[in-house]
Length: 275
Image 1 (cartoon, rainbow, N blue to C red):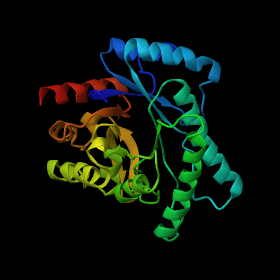
Image 2: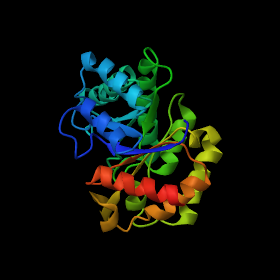
Image 3: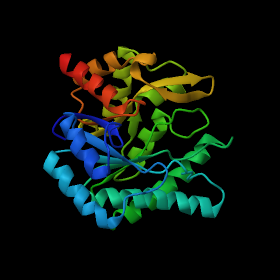
Image 4: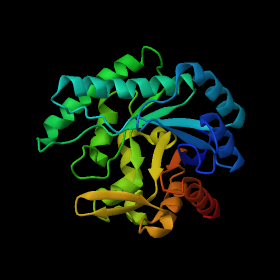
């Protein structure tokens, strides 16, 4: 990608209208990317995707997507497992038709099972997804995301390993989830350097040039993530994260998931520019 782009998880709060209006408003805010939030269902219909694609290209807004929350590729129930595969697949299809580059999702839950066995089940599910996605798009990234709760599959090692094991897969690095999942760790310059260093070492420098990242304020308890906060309300150290992202010359998209999405996206963008 050409640079590190900052943007919103969904249409800006200030938008009065549709996804199309949201993309225009992201540009008016001087932000550079937007995530289509399919978290409660893939709301975008195929007959609207061409319009979304045109406005995103016209405004130079890079699109990503977040697949529905209801995914569990470790489900023992065939119906839930196949529904999970289809949620990611449908999200990828609508994003692909809209000209987007990367779809992220929470892959599943441990359910008190052996983590290695869970890894294998989820890996096989993502392989199935990628095989089907490649029938319509060989370039869109499928991204298991770092999760914020200890009960959820998806620590840094797991999402990196999936990216090594499966073609067309890269991690979605949610720095706030890493902070919450590890109960306040992963929040210093040195730790941010270790995270990006691990990605570069395991997946190559090109992985740092096509990043899909999330950041927000966050609150956590003894089981990990509780809820998102604004950056100013949170102890998440976004200022040092901006310094390290610049140090590593990271490119791609950084999506803000704070409750005040555009305000905090602009705050991170401004701090990044000042470093």
